[in-house]
Amino acid sequence: MALRSIFRAVIMGPPGSGKGTVSARIVKSFGPKHLSSGDLLRANITAKTELGLLMKSCIDQGQLVPDDVISRLILRELRAMEQTDWLLDGFPRTVSQAEALDTVYCVDTVINLDVPFQTIKQRLTSRWIHTPSGRVYNMDFNPPRVAGLDDDTGEALVQRDDDTPETVTRRLKAYENLTEPVLEYYRSKGVLETFSGTETNKIWPHIQVFLNEKLSTMKQKVVA
Ligand code: ATP
Ligand code: MG
Image (tube, rainbow, N blue to C red; front, side):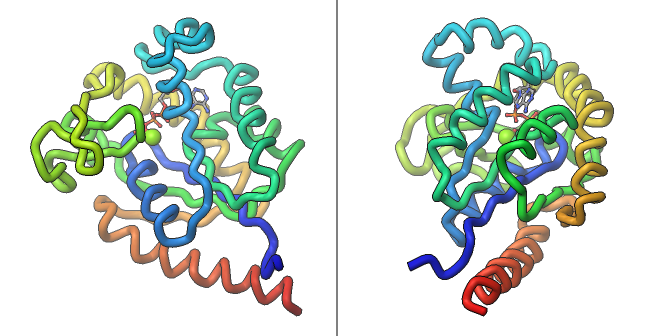
């Protein structure tokens, strides 16, 4: 018995704004499926698929991969998730990607993490990730229990090839030029919710309250 309609959300914010960390918490509290374009691309690189090999240099240089490539990849994944609540992370990143998504699905909510660029630059250099799961750690404020090892699997953590200072600068530029217009796109549709701050742990409770309300409203609408 469906008590409410399917919840389709997008999480946005500059690189290193905490999308991965907040997404994991949203999944834990509210249970949508998390689909991260960056994780998907890195999985392709690790598996050395044709797509992964083609896109690796682009990603390592901090440039966006072509719109049609990423849109096709993501929309294919979403097709298998028709009846599932989902949370998209890292897609759409350009207005053209947002339009591609719109031809297939209507997004209910866009959660925008508004974190100052200065904070981000510091953060990314102390970030370590567990590539297979996409779990993110930060040596300053969210360290693993054992240095260098993933909490759940005990496997090695790595730093991303695109987390060097120069590449981070380039990614922030791409964000300003290509992704900020997407915020405007969703604002004009009335679905943008912005959460500002410098610490994920302080931003998170506000997101939790917001989603609790949002999901209970969706439930009431279907019951009514
Ligand atoms: P973070 O994961 O720290 O928030 P990010 O948003 O820069 O940082 P990912 O989302 O993991 O990183 O993406 C890494 C790289 O993958 C991007 O720099 C880009 O090259 C490519 N990429 C990911 N998603 C897209 C997309 N929607 N369009 C184009 N390129 C993408
Ligand atoms: Mg990410």
